[in-house]
Length: 372
Image 1 (tube, rainbow, N blue to C red):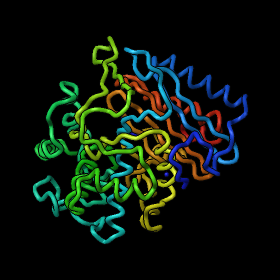
Image 2: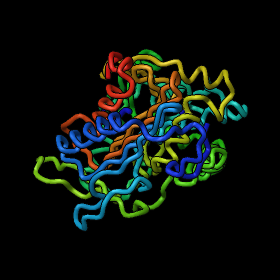
Image 3: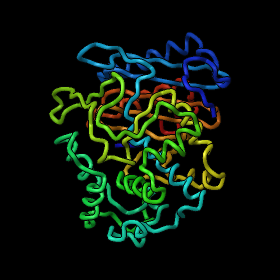
């Protein structure tokens, strides 16, 4: 399952953020170290980076394990990684900023840009944002993942993915705005709509309207196949025999649904900004936080407009070949959690989610009863 918010500092380790307390107590750090180590052993993780900031209480920022299994190079806290579906939080914010600027309306129909798409005269921007378009997950998996399994560098364009989805209307679930169903094609379409409305490519638009206003210098929307830096990602192959190096991929097929790259320091900035509505009008931000249960997801996780409510935590997760991440913000404590591991496994619980659960049980036990 792919599931998975204003301090502006360029690097989280310097201690310049007045919100940051010193390290947690030795006992808490020991518990956190043990929890991360246990999950790394249990999930056979090459490496992990964990950032936790709780103003007035402490911070915990560590990198563990290997960045490269072949060379033995160690993992660093500032390694850039593929953030997968956390990309959706940026795309949704770009869309909602266009709404605030009266460039588009959430009631606009998909037919304005894609008149031939199934149900285009009924699907709205709001339906796409909130995963209520009726585009079924079954077609989504076939389109996005089967081709990647065969060749992660396959020359598939974003437009071709949309065309394939258009050709599978018989597999669509039900009419729009009847059920929340997590589907990547929603955000691939939204990314293309941003380009058509703004006249800019999606990466340029997000950089100018989201990243630069927040001082986020380590986040990119890639157009190349390579991952900057020396971190490698690994994916369990279909036969469960070995880990395959999946660092290099063509980002076009996943596009606005999961292509972006970031690091822990930038995601710390983004977590607070996203969930406090820093870039949006208050009414727009309030509407995006209205979440609903998602078909097939655990009961404690609900979806809004490019945002997740996970047992009282706001944020999003991301999973893309070799990289699994969680980014969460707890409003009641102004706390941020960012976790990334450089391994994915299609058969097991996402490891970043497992580490997040253990951290919540240690630091926020009241919220552990909310499904964590």
